[in-house]
Length: 430
Image 1 (spheres, helix red, strand yellow):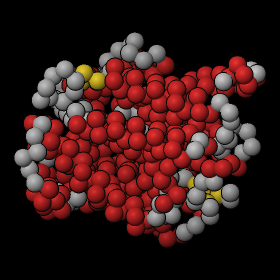
Image 2: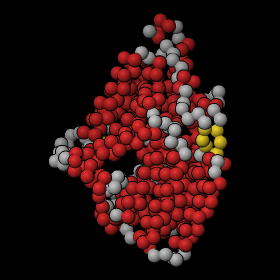
Image 3: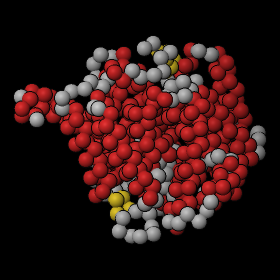
Image 4: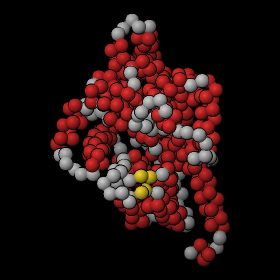
């Protein structure tokens, strides 16, 4: 699978980036009024969208980059072009927006040069998925583990309110991924039975007022079962339908009744909201409070929070406050956080290249099929990054650190168990 850096393909994009930097320099030197922030936000979207379009033939890279670009588009609409559609904007003024926009711009530009492209955009799953006699046991055991986590860690006792859940509920996706992986070589009835069970729990998640966990499960089904149907036009159609459905779920969970028609939702989506997603705006506003809060803390306090963050990624739930809790001591917001600004709180401007390197390293894992060793591990880790992309782009980077660590631990455990069972006599396995 031949690959190359996108930055080598076009001198035009390099000249375009220079022009962008000059425009930003003008804005940051106060040569323009504050209202030109929406121009900078639009430029951020254009760069991200242009990067995504370079991968429009890829059923795996394009959805991640398109979601990133769509997030920036929603920020442009909801924070700058039509701020009245997002009441959350009032919690913080526009004094920190220049820094936020510059952080996003620099991360996007570095991504341009770090992401690899390939002539062969499609995965040949036959190189990765090797059916063994024990596959059916691991497939159904993983499915059972995921189902149990979703049953045990979702509080459905309060009628008429969003069900509460713990992090364990969301990490059920780890086991769903392994269920879909191990079921690859099973007969079609077994494969689709597993897919139907996962789909049933997707709608259960929506019914109780949540969206992200269900979206992750749908993404896993797409990755392992439907990606071979991918085309750019189909993706756009499904994406618009998906955004409409997410708005329907959002309307439903407001009071757990559907007193708004589909027509009204579509009018709002294509009219007032201009296809933007309010979740992205809420996350962006929360991110602005991260930058503002950092300015209120001493260097020693930031270092303490960084230490606590690192420890919490290794030993979940044992150390310090989440960034949401830290910033809420000074600003009230609705949680969430755009990845570049989330890491900026802990590392300052050093976080910019680190964020871009982190994103590119994970996305470039898809090309590790060239390697004879560890290809199964690389592709499975990439599948987890793909499936959780909506989470780490708009909520928190936990999936990129703690989530990957947990996923790798489960992978190593299952791989070891697989080798042990393979050595047993067939009568014992049966």
